[in-house]
Amino acid sequence: MSVRYDLSGRCAIVTGGAGGLGRGIARALLAAGASVELWDQDANALTEAVVDLGRRVSRRQLDIRVAGAVEEAAQAAFASHGRIDILVNNAGVLGEVKPIWETSPENFQRVLQVNLFGTYLVTRSVVGLMRQQAARAPSAGGHPLRGHVVNIASIQGKEGMPMASAYSASKAGMIALTKSVARDTATDGIMVTAVTPSAAETAMAKEISAERRAEIMARIPMGRFVEVDEVARMVLWLSSDDCSFSTGGIFDLSGGRASY
Ligand SMILES: NC(=O)c1ccc[n+]([C@@H]2O[C@H](COP(=O)([O-])OP(=O)(O)OC[C@H]3O[C@@H](n4cnc5c(N)ncnc54)[C@H](O)[C@@H]3O)[C@@H](O)[C@H]2O)c1
Picture (cartoon, protein in one colour):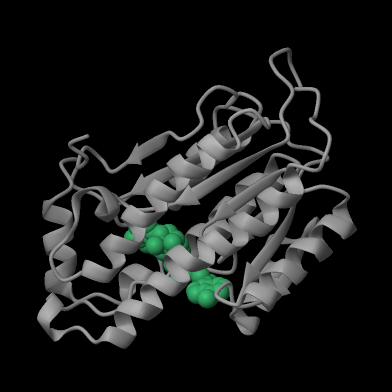
């Protein structure tokens, strides 16, 4: 990594932190000196991730769709670290890869519940607590800030995608949620942004067929998938004091696919 960030003394929460992108983001935050809580529903993956990532990392097993569990986890994280500086809303599911007329209402609801409603619940609880904490003096000049929220949306939320109506709608919802929460917190010193990656080589990408993979690749002008580290590097900047006047911004990570 060519740019170095100093996030020592910061507390970060990464939802879906036991998975592919979440773990890469957690690794980058740890390397910059932050303490990281991984929030995930998968107990085995959490155990493996904590061993993999080493010190300054802790775990909470929860389903982000459950309001009570999310509120309890946020309160516990705040009590144990004294503050929450960074929230990365990364937990998500792909759901069925089918044209809309073949999808089930249960699938549509589940994808919206995890990707959008879960992000809402976590943001609601954590941002509520961030607003109560003192603003930090920035590491090098600039303006005092209370925290950063980074949402992992998707290029599909901007452009849509055949056979992914629930997923694309949920990610479009995350983009609108990002812009709205950014306005709610604009005078609180809390920066709220989102990134819109194209496909990455994670467990999620392995759920799709070879044909689907080729179809996605053909849409990426740079002709390759985004690397986990490329996502993590952008999230690091968005979580740092250097991101002090970009709130409500949606940041591209699509290898040229995005048309806006
Ligand atoms: N991989 C890609 O191609 C790609 C592209 C663009 C955006 N994204 C987004 O990046 C994020 C991470 O995806 P990934 O590729 O690392 O997938 P992944 O499947 O490797 O990780 C997702 C993690 O979220 C957790 N999770 C799922 N539902 C949960 C719930 N209800 N409560 C708590 N945890 C839950 C899973 O246990 C898993 O550890 C997702 O939001 C995804 O939509 C992925």
